[in-house]
Length: 196
Image (cartoon, rainbow, N blue to C red; front, side):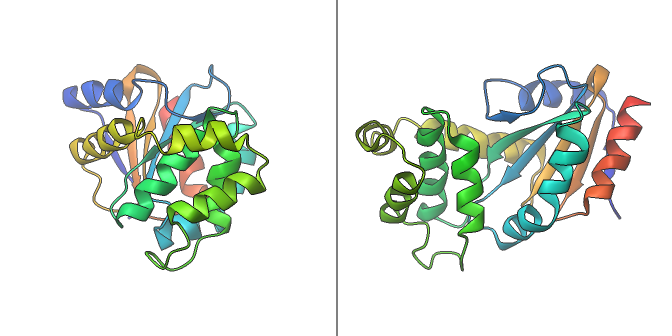
């Protein structure tokens, strides 16, 4: 029930796609396992996992150098989800992607209730002390539309059917998929299986 292991010839191509580009990454670039999370900032399951499991995952796997965590948005709750993703990327231009990411999940409310509106994103940016001229220009330019769309297409190609979904990619392209808000211990087992 906890996770599925995939090692097929097609998984090598998928692993390469999941690792392509320069998505926001937390942890050592030398970590032997990459955890690619597909999530939606409005998704209640993603928010619950963030609040209950992500801190332990970062402490036990990321800060120890066993794994690095990569974020890819998989927005399906609507325009506010896209606004949240684009705002996080705009904050990333000022070195605050992960702080914005955390603030979004800490502030999460019912999907499409207005908490993730464009106006709210401005408020969050001010809370983090961002340069608002730079943030507004980036956030409102549409420059991240193609990134959000390509992340969604990549998720579809990878078979994402719920958020959060995690792809753990180890040495030699070995891959494990973990769907849903699973306990941190499941990730530890999967990382161990990929590196043993």
